Length: 232
Image (tube, rainbow, N blue to C red; front, side, top):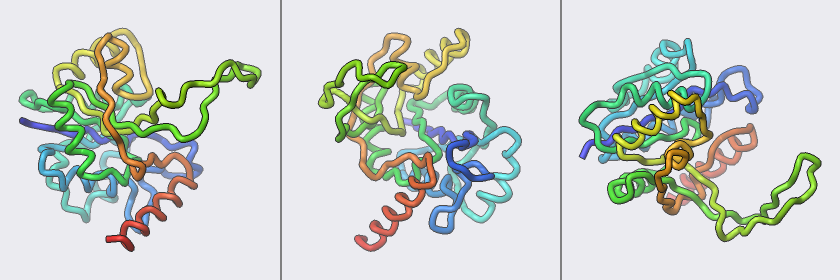
């Protein structure tokens, strides 16, 4: 079985409040995206990594971000598109024909574990489309345009979705082609699979697998890494 991982690090990070994209900002002395790549590099089930970077930044990433690190599995650095869906599609174009499973992961989830990567791969073998997720702790309410509560959602049926999401290669190619042809976009890749009538299996994610969106998230990630180093 051949497995490839697409790491999507093509965002501009407008909400992060920094001059450079957040995926290249330092986390404990190393760019966030390097923390993200490392577990996929270590995972024995991953054969190839495709890194998607912002337009015009391929040589910057190659020369300034990755130059001193020996990533043997990064075979392709591709430039992303206008939206996340466009960027993932650029990655899919570089997937080898003989690949069986494709994982798609956010470049700003640097605390992903090899254990979760392996679990997603194994579950994708069984179900074809898999997404890790964690339960919601807070009460959730749907509101209208006037910020008035419409209804309270049943928390036990709600999950916070994470990545990496795993897919059989033929399935993700098929639905992405349809999405691109129809101009349809989604905030995650499982959403595209769902859109075209396929089921997605949810598996238990990890509390540590946070997405860095704001400067506060970065501080939290630093604390979690410090905790890891103290407890190991």
